[in-house]
Image 1 (tube, one colour):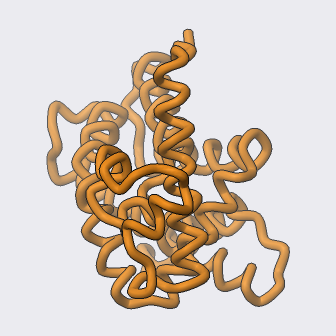
Image 2 (cartoon, rainbow, N blue to C red):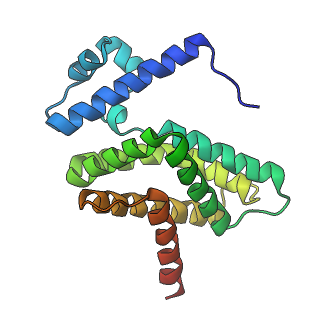
Length: 207
């Protein structure tokens, strides 16, 4: 059963979302170098001190992981563990990612739009790409643990790492390809690009 956040938690999440929205908009308008924490705080209507309660850096506010996607994928992988005695394989984890992307496109279209805006920013700025790589590393441990549980591994072993890295690489490639297509004016759906990317990975792996 889904737990409904209490009023205090809803306010906290709303403030966090406001800061993220302000940071992303300012990065798009002024670039990373032209944006300060004070600028983001002012645009979000909070103090710099409040900003730092939520984010350690301005890059984290603009480029942080998408909570809706992360939570939905974690729930999907946990559901896979609870509902099936068979250990998940690479194709199962990829299918879980595709299912979540398809659901979010319908239920929370703003989620995909934010992912697109972030990828476009990162593709245009080498410094931001470096920041995103560092931030992704911070989320990698949790994802490895979820994949280990879904695939039936007793811990984070070599198989877990290969599955997790393959899925992560495929999703990053799909996001970049999707961003490129959308910038070119193509009406591409992220889930379709991701599924095509998974098929391409299979082809490459076969040699």
